[in-house]
Image (cartoon, rainbow, N blue to C red; front, side, top):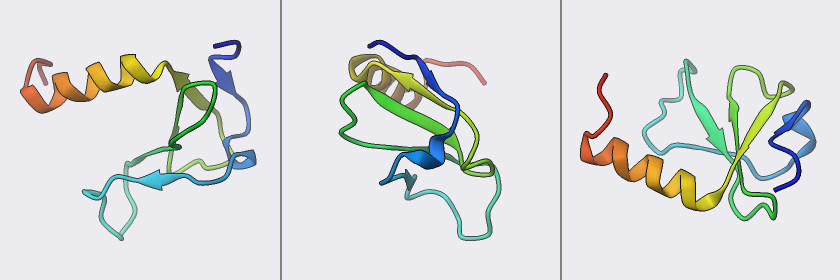
Length: 73
């Protein structure tokens, strides 16, 4: 991965929110699947803001830890 961040996430197409996100807005993360540089993640309230890129394997481990309750609140 060459760039861990992009300054304008709106330049990338295909963002999706979690199926658990409500339609009333709020604090949501959006992800972009199948990007060659990894998994971009952005704040849905700031679509023109930055996006962070995570290696796909690291994101998968993070999601598994959240689902398994291994991360304290």
